[in-house]
Image (cartoon, rainbow, N blue to C red; front, side, top):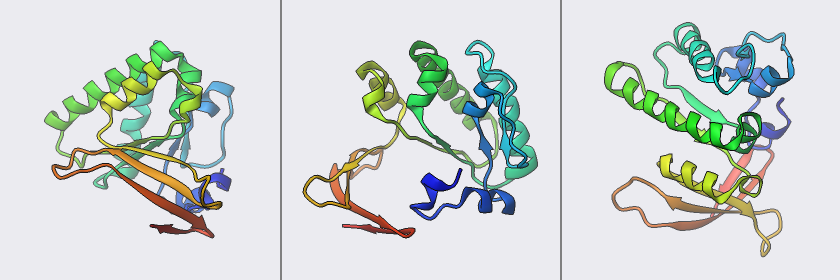
Length: 182
């Protein structure tokens, strides 16, 4: 579980055991896998028609028992995998419902608002899917390998709600958990 995230310094198992991280694993749910770790949750069964109520039930439990008054940060790894599990049309509808639920909670609940990060391999989804995700995203950051500078990634910041925002391009270099941005 840690292989992909250790590159940039996140040790999932270590942080989960410390109580700093919780995982809701939809791929484990879809494949009937149960982990022996108390920081990894599944939602029972994965059916697009019952997914959202099941997910919200598990999420509320995590909020009450683990997150409490901290700010939740949700990372979907990956939205193209989410589309694969749910189907593209169901996935878009679930994102729309989730955004509506999040907005209602923002108005009716007095807790710290979550930050949601959706990772996406755009080569695996349609332009329509990307368009819907872009519509509901406050920030859009695209990262791709640099052809001019081997070992570097190029980061394109395309969208932000900040009033003085101007799109920008940055070079990223990640090695041994250290991140360098130019």
